[in-house]
Image 1 (tube, rainbow, N blue to C red):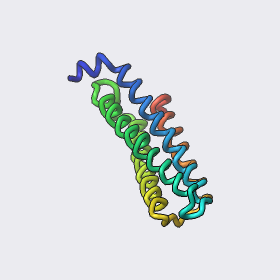
Image 2 (spheres, helix red, strand yellow):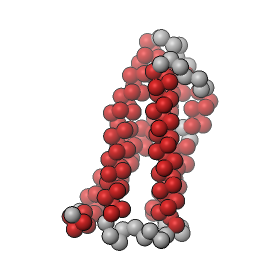
Image 3 (tube, rainbow, N blue to C red):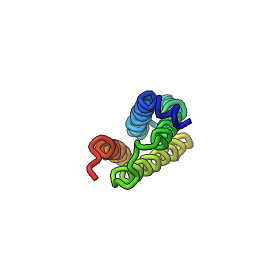
Length: 149
């Protein structure tokens, strides 16, 4: 099986990158929806439309993209010689990935709060939260491409 993965390394890598791009697109867009949703009156058509958009984005794009990113990333990590497990960059990347996954969980919880008309956070909170995936993404890309340590 490892021979198959090794022989198809570039395909697996390409699918991993596409999955990560889709995951990140959703992770950057969903907090924007929350920012706008904060301004919508509870029970309004606009609020109900945001609920639909948020649910579809999370369940239809973000969750599947994250799962595929994990699958393809796991396959890449299992190919002998791809990762030097003694290097610090991989552990930093994994830590950032854990934080990104935790943020994903937070997005899911916040969506449920909006769904129940129980959001207690301000649009300013979501504006700041919207920056976190960008920072994590920058660190992850630097770790993988530059491998500074």
